[in-house]
Length: 89
Image (cartoon, rainbow, N blue to C red):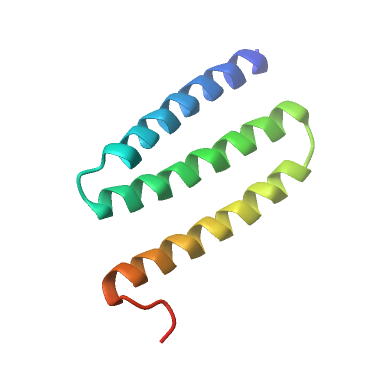
């Protein structure tokens, strides 16, 4: 039963990832592209978590945590660059 739930999760998250990729490529504004990239990071984190559940190991959960921290910092830095034109004050 858990196999079917994992398969459904992988399919749904892969579809969401593809739709975010479409928004990233065809986004009319730069803000749409930044938000699509941030949402893609969230989708990748969820895919890593599902793979960790499937493999029953905790290594993938730690990798997802590191990826979440990197995604948050990069989104904040890019938004700060868009607002001010400089990341470091």
